[in-house]
Length: 330
Ligand code: ZN
Ligand code: ZN
Ligand code: FE
Image 1 (spheres, rainbow, N blue to C red):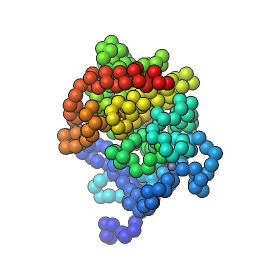
Image 2 (image 1 turned 180 degrees about the vertical axis):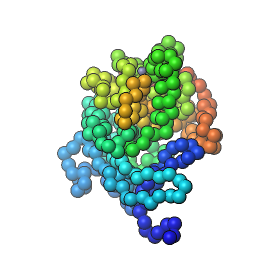
Image 3 (image 1 turned 120 degrees about the horizontal axis):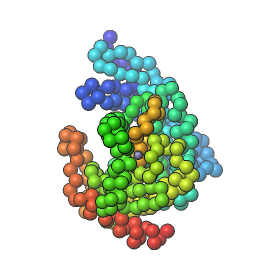
Image 4 (image 1 turned 90 degrees about the horizontal axis):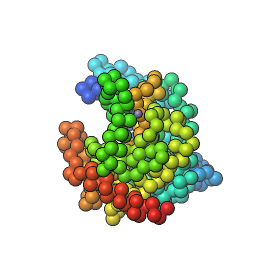
């Protein structure tokens, strides 16, 4: 039998036995049609999008994962699994020309968060669901081709590799010290008080001591919790305003808007992880000079980042921008 039949749709998870992590493999995405530059699939009016919405969740039309994955044949050595899951797009506003999430009103950002929570509740009990990853890519520099403000949700049948590492270190720390590693980091950042960029009653935003990306901001709820559906209405509203302010700070700190990735880190849903602490990570990828920081040979090949300024200096820049410009404006 030939190893690869013509036109065969392959969608599967391949296990990297060396790095011990899953790779999502699909040849469906290659068949993605090219639209003229003026066409926007997320604008109101198409049959799929309709009219009269403020936020709309649609299925990714070329997903890596699906609720009905194709059958897989076994490999004689390597491990693979069916690509169970779901890839969704959160169209955050009907307005095509808004640049960023921070350009939405606080109330609209709150609605986006609530929509994500609603989806999390809907899928967390699916038998194939192990992890719910909400993330946002912003900026052409990091490969975003569709300008219409949107974020994405991957509902995964496995625990993402990075989350796995965070779980392992926080589990170890809790075992040794009987306290949450993340709560500890919050208190250390409070005490050092040089990397904080913004704080509210319920949230703390800072560039961590160990930041990888030039403007890497982590946002933590002060309350120790694991899942986004544990946030109370007050915490949700404050998260909306915190995101608006921090992202507006990143947008305005340099001459051009900062490209970034934003990811919600919460605990997996397959069992309880009481030692984990939900947070949001934002990776602002421009250096203070406005030049792009790439993850290249050292970072991707070696696995360790180089940081060629100081987190403390960049935190001061961002804090100053937020307190002197962003807050006085709103
Ligand atoms: Zn649009
Ligand atoms: Zn904690
Ligand atoms: Fe994290």
